[in-house]
Length: 91
Image (cartoon, rainbow, N blue to C red; front, side, top):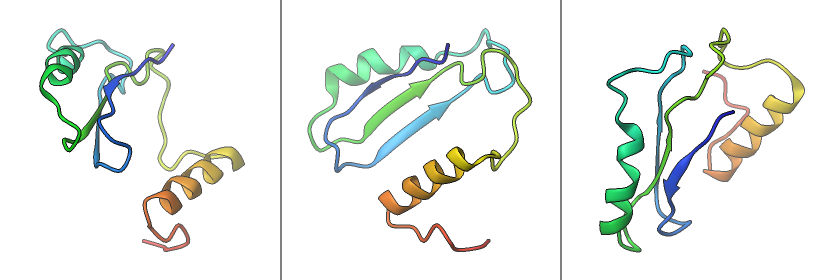
C-alpha cells in the first residue's frame, strides 16, 4: 500500500512532493516521514504545501515513464491542464 503524509496550507499555494523508495527498497537513511510533523507545527497559510510519499513503489515493480495506458494518459492530461501546462506539447 502506498501512503502519503502532508500539510496543505492553502490549495492555491505551491506544493512540494517528496518521493522516495522508487526501487522498492526502504532506505535506512529515509527520514522523509520525519519532515511532516515539525513542518505542520510551523507552517502558516502562506507557506508551501508539503506531501511526502516515502515508499512510492513498495513492491519494487519496474517503473516506466511515461506510464502506459489510457487512464494514466488522462490523469497526466488533467494534471498538466490543472497547472496551466499545454498537455499536447511535445518535448
